Image (cartoon, rainbow, N blue to C red):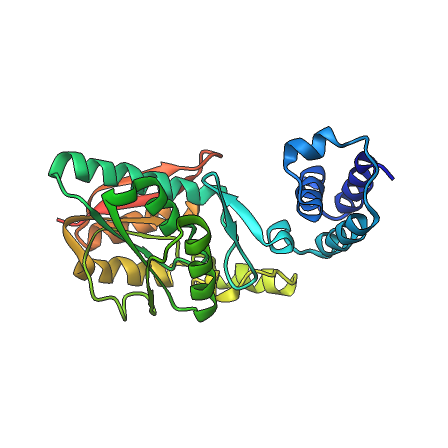
Length: 285
């Protein structure tokens, strides 16, 4: 069997249950199974596929058809142009979260330029795989001191693995229930907290959704953690510091009001690629 034929067959099988991106899913998994770049895979379409590679690939396809996300099958996900290790103990990095990173980068450069502060002190709360914290450190380098926290010991292990793989060194990590173990103050606090409603998470669980429930469940209205972060963050922000958060578009009006009630100003909302309100930020006076 040729590589192209294996891809087409796999794409067809995946499309029966998951119609969104069956060919792309198949390509990404075959790249992993064959240890090939995308370019080499395409150039090898008319070559015969190795039997051992085909067997491994078919096992991956079976997992995908059963509902496993491609990122958990391959153990990696691209985020902001870098490959992050992921497993079932952390959320899979999503493109929408890159908007959160972009907002934090813009604010960091603004702080450096307008206030002459460097390094900018940044905390990534609820870091999970570390994709936000590690990306910020990668992009800003010595211009920023970046720390991260998460309540999950499993997430801590994934975070450190990504630090070593991408940065070649560890960033400081707090194993913490939100701010409970945080001791420093920061110019920027950034967070992608759990923000799904209990009803949404319950439905996902009933459909065997594989991502960790602890990273998804945000309470009856999805805002339990968002409220706690907004209310507590003032104690951990430097004067004029910024809080920047990802949330669901339907929650933005309520979150904006929470920012105002807690004395944040210059509140800004950024839209994702689909033009949905995705990221909100505000400065504490």
